[in-house]
Image (cartoon, rainbow, N blue to C red; front, side):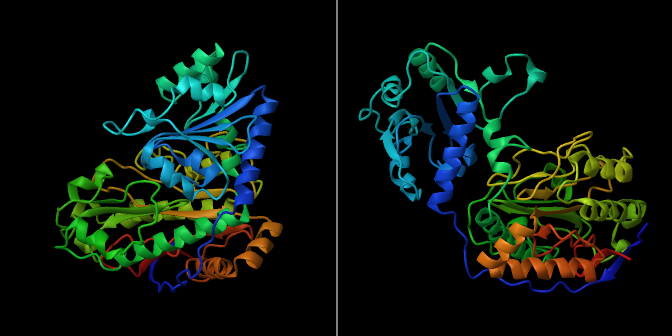
Length: 460
């Protein structure tokens, strides 16, 4: 078994993006066409995609428009172009979509206190969109349920009651939850990504992880948590979840930054995320083990090194065709002791939102596939003075055809990926299969002592 050691390692500058990949109208149209086909195969006549300020990602996947101000409803039925119901503020912002949309105003989707008198009733709008008695309606909202909740699991909806009531009034039946069309870990449309989508995720991850690196290399006692995040100079791209900067007794809360001043010896947790990316690191604000309380000066030997070794084995095992259950088995075999407190899935699919679903679970036979974007999200939670260790980054899987296409269409992205692979092998001792593409610009870099950011764990 490889030996984990703490060693001085210089992290290269893998480069800043000069080109931002975008998703074209043709791809959005293809996503909509495929979703309608999948719905039709299940007896669904009209497919609705609901989104709101928190649960926006499925609607954004189909349109490029994120309903960041209010709720919206995409109606995929017999009409062309698709119908998009929006509130007052969505009427303007939805123009960002690159595809033609028949935008119709329904002001009850707007925030309270805004004008309400200029739109038709919801039932009327649904009828005009093609809903009627006898038509089967499916809803993609933000989560689906399985038979674990009972035989009527397709009737368990997360969409708001006012929408479900209106559909029932128009059609005479309840809509069905078909969110798995977008989010199933094997067959969901958002689980296998195109070359342009992967390039966009890599762009976001590069920006996010470069920002992370700026803070990690500048952490000092005395600065506030806010000041630590300010150093990141993050570029303001849309976030998939809240930034985290938590220190001292707050570190267990996974909370947003505060005015608390960092103190030497503090446990610290820091994470940033952009669409399709998240990077997190955790450790102690010390220069070496001598700065830790005497009872946990074996922090590296007891927690960080075993954790890193398990993550390395995970990295080297993952590939196209690897069953998700095999990755779960590796982590259980290495970190199964209750001390480590690993309870969530050791890795999951990532997309515009931070967690789509996970094929990585005990006993899972779902084979990992080309086009998947995966979060290396393996988190110990000791619940005690040893705190945690964290090396959370994003990767993608790409077969030879997809790799060739990525190198051709997005050569700058490809150069960064190849440089990261070489660094992980040559400096950290992590050999990846050819199809594994690291998206982080601090790839697998784990400095357990945050005041020594170049003292990284590696395997020999």
